[in-house]
Length: 361
Ligand SMILES: Nc1ncnc2c1ncn2[C@@H]1O[C@H](COP(=O)(O)OP(=O)(O)OP(=O)(O)O)[C@@H](O)[C@H]1O
Ligand SMILES: [Mg+2]
Image (cartoon, rainbow, N blue to C red; front, side):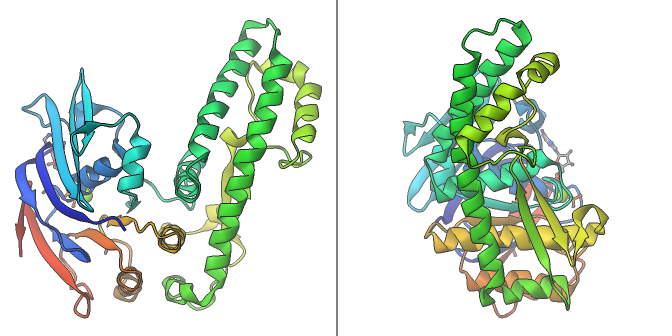
């Protein structure tokens, strides 16, 4: 189980040199607009992912009057330290350099619910794949090497298609068909697991998020056209060989797991017709299912919820909080503080944030 025990934010956006000892259960951070709530959530996300969910540019998160970011935390007894300048990135765990962010993700799995990251329901396929594969990875760590090989293979195929020199194309296509089946299999197993969790009673509390009749469905789109059997390597390969002419014309492969997506629906309405509030609620249900899957896998994540009360009424906020408290994960949530949040029965600590300074309530 991942728990953030002590956090030291030295330099991160408008947050500077301060220690923060969170509760092992619920942490509520209250602050007015522009005080640093999202920055705090982003810094915690950074610790578990080695990157931001808001920007690709390090310069955006380096404090205005500085040249680096620096944060560290004790996570389940181990120390993660992050120090990044534009030239150099150093990520240490217990003083030892780590080579890949996936190591951070193992030590500190972080699930985030934030309008800034975008909602998965009604979201872009890229965001959907990112959430999906984060879950798949925690289910089966080997998938990371498969994804890396797939990416490399795809890149080689696209280079060959652009150059027009077709040597080795068939070998790469064979390799791609093989890796594609593996990726799709893992994604199917994972989404089916989430669907079965949804059907079980455990998620009744989640159902109350989405009102009286609740028929929330999601289906993996594998990235291949309907006529291709995505679990049959030979079938994929012959499809690719038969489509060679078209591929050479388009100069890149626009089918396959890199184009996968998830289709969501609520009460038989496609995600695109849902209101923003409905998209938010169903996104939360999907994210919570991922939390349950991780908890069942004995790998409890830390959950970050930015702007908890925006677009949600008190009953829904209560069902989210009760649900997370039930599964006993550590939670960081922020709020503007206009509504009284239903926290009383839970073990929780409240903090204030003003001008980037966090203080216990
Ligand atoms: N690189 C940076 N260095 C210093 N300050 C920054 C940096 N990036 C953003 N800020 C400041 O952080 C503040 C906003 O912080 P944040 O987005 O966390 O606010 P918030 O509390 O989440 O507000 P809201 O309630 O509106 O969501 C802004 O005032 C902004 O100027
Ligand atoms: Mg914010």
